[in-house]
Length: 205
Image (cartoon, rainbow, N blue to C red; front, side, top):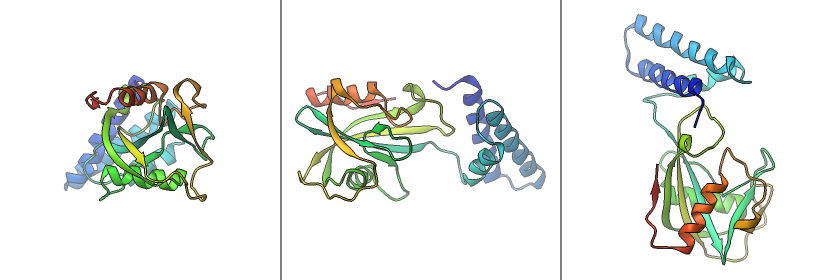
């Protein structure tokens, strides 16, 4: 769960963004702009984030404020799960990333797997839709929903060129160091629960 100050900051930023989207009166727009700057000051004062960078991130968000969507893929081979080493932090995650506009979740998963691991797959089952803030991830500036899809291998011979720093299959008891901003051990454990009991319904929240 995010700290209270970050929960408040997210709420204030969404109010400011929505206000700047719909307000036409110049005085109202000025007030929402001030609120956005104050929110950026709250974030920078309570973290290591630079005020100017936080404000720039806020200003880049346009339109009605909604959660972002992070799609992750669970690809199994026997009793092992496919994982990727992230170039950004050298830690490991399930293949995936933020969804692009106009791209269905299944296509996001299949594309990310191919780009990050070289494996061709197909999406076969929805496993979970989680609110990131409720799943013990480190705090993050924007509210995010996480979609987990099970995907099946179509080819055992991956292409060699990938966007990640490495890819490998791991059993649940021997997971590599995890990139906790992207995935937690509890989430991976739940993916294995679905593997072992296909009758389980998809998780949510």
